[in-house]
Length: 373
Image (cartoon, rainbow, N blue to C red; front, side):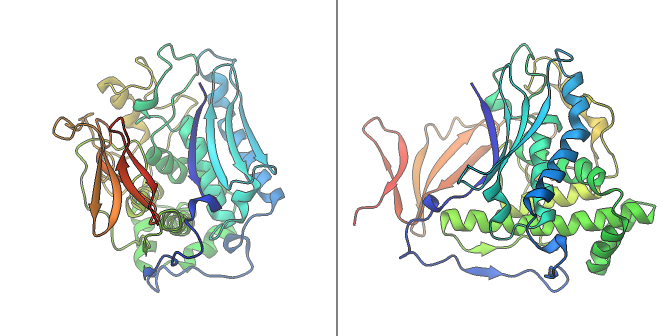
């Protein structure tokens, strides 16, 4: 069975029709966080040639991980940029007997809010699914023998890897661009980078990653709002998610928490080394104290560079779903949603589109269905 983990998928079919009002914007970024909009490559979508060059470099960085993976010499990391896929999407694929694949459609290059910086970050995220390591997507494991050579990293771990490990390698030689990006940051954000890195070059790369993270955080939020017709509340540097999960969230979380994770990766001065997958050991892809301990050396454990507690819970604690039972329909202020609970993600709501209601079918299964006219 193919394991496919998409960063974002947004298509016209997600909309419920032209009669629906567009999502409202209730919070614009502050002046300090405002993004420049010029003709430079950092503020426009990438060309297909630029996208191919970025993918080629990312794959080259982590080809050694694929080659070294169990069984050694049997895996290869490849990229695909598909001009025939009409759905704007990017994802990683992992299938027995086939290559590790980083995939994007050319439509992904042209979605609203896409820039060359966002493209680089989102494709580094896909690489992170394959080589980012612990914590893994334990609820979708099916490789007890380890024959695939890796296990898909959790969504936020892939974000963390993208800004902590992948982008610094991608941009290390682009000193002029890094310096320009660093100069665009507000003083408080520059100070964050200065506090974590002792040399100017690393501070400037950190600053560029913070700006790219802000752009990507906006895209995350806009995509979510467009899909579910909710109000846009942009993530910000000065409004971190202060919630603390009781179990590690392996799936996607709210945009502010994802943005906080991107920022933490940029501020973490502990970089992964070698060609091993951090924490990947028997039982493959499952949580174990040994796996968590093995991955510690590849991440910041304290301070602003540590994985945010809005999604990461050290110690492998699981949520108690016994009070909740099967998925249920809930309605809050007119918004229909399905309430789920699982051991890894805890209790969460999946919102229906505004043109839908939540109902149970004849078998008692909750589902979002079109509202009757």
